[in-house]
Length: 334
Image 1: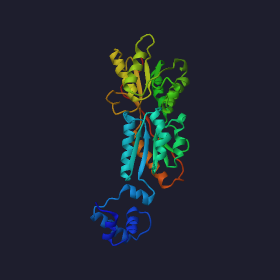
Image 2: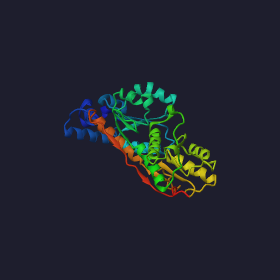
Image 3: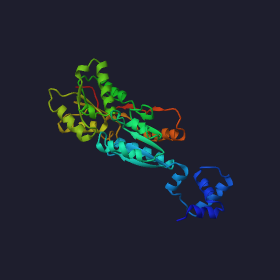
Image 4: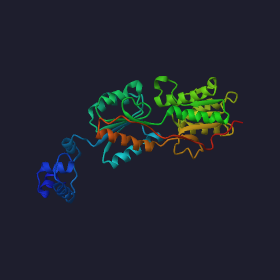
């Protein structure tokens, strides 16, 4: 394996000059830089990341903190982040830990403080645990993905508006008995994004004079929990709603499967709307609010790159595009 001394000897320069030429940290003439780069190429020299970090003060690594990537949204988001970071020649250290868990608390209390990153992308920050403030104290440039953005650049959709639009779609079709599936029954465990989606649902009902019709069934944002919540809602035909707004598409798909197993036709007997435009939304003909987590990942890296290049750059809050996509899971009530 070639060393920096081998590159320097081949190029006829000192080790310090060769290091400056390859790292870009310090001045060398263009002629010398080309000579050193040619020598490095001929020797197949690859700089050791630790040595480069010591020479430049940069790690070329970004820390990414997010919930576990077993959900579609987070997996897609991570793909976008990774693609953009690799294109910029950055590595990433991923910490996929559940919101509200002891593991996540340990991560914020000790692990992050010991690591050196050129920047941090944090997904699903929990205000009640003061996670954003703790990350800001590390001094690393920071970008958040999600609705909580105090004092840092961020990108997110408007969760309140997304649920409001989904609910308004059902009201415009003529539904008045509209239930909401999602969000924890324990307010202490309710994520900020889910809370805002509940707010949007309630706001739409209130504007339509249907506030007293609100029904919220707590469920984790997953197909099994959406299925279980829908079974409890739909089991009694005397109190059965004619429509459901789900906190996300996974929960909405679970509700559709539950309705089918109970012999309830979608959409003639039950309309269902989700949020996210999951990769399986088209398969279930699901009406939903579209967003692109992969594009949000690209945008998060763009925002972070700007902060890493200039820590004093203005804070930016980007609202990601979202729009109602009408498919076959909604119709006028019978």
